[in-house]
Image (cartoon, rainbow, N blue to C red; front, side):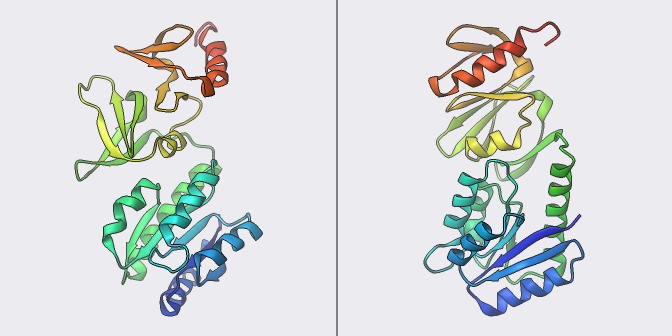
Length: 242
């Protein structure tokens, strides 16, 4: 497959370097080079085929994190992904919160760039195949943790963090991530959001009321904005074999 991408950086040398790296990568096609995030927003509007953005963070007018936040809020399908390219490592956590595919610290080599590009290729290949992931990888307690999706009971939002509750594990996994990002990572066939603060695994629900569902020992409330999703879940939950 070919991934359509753009490069966004207000440093001409850095912008040309990324363009050269893209040209050396067979499965990447550079749609445009943008010297500002403002221009990049226009390019995305004009080129809906763009899937990947190599994005600097420290830029005038609109910085990379603000730009990525706009993309994250507007792209519910996760068809546009970000690889941050920056000289400042203190933004790594913010980048992870926005579900960036990778974080390249300047100056980075072509080998580093290739690693990030291959991660993008794997992501978009799976997306194209409509493949449901078996695992999540999240940062928790300064380490990368692999979570078996089949073990997830429910996810609870706590401000900028989420708590992932698992079968046969007393303490939840705490990670810096918005609940919306977590919702996009989980397969919609197996999970449903029933509250602004909760996502539940459909097959882990053991009982329901008009206002809540029971998952393990927790009663998860259903809020008004998610009544339609709850109604759709109830239709399938009542079916034999569901």
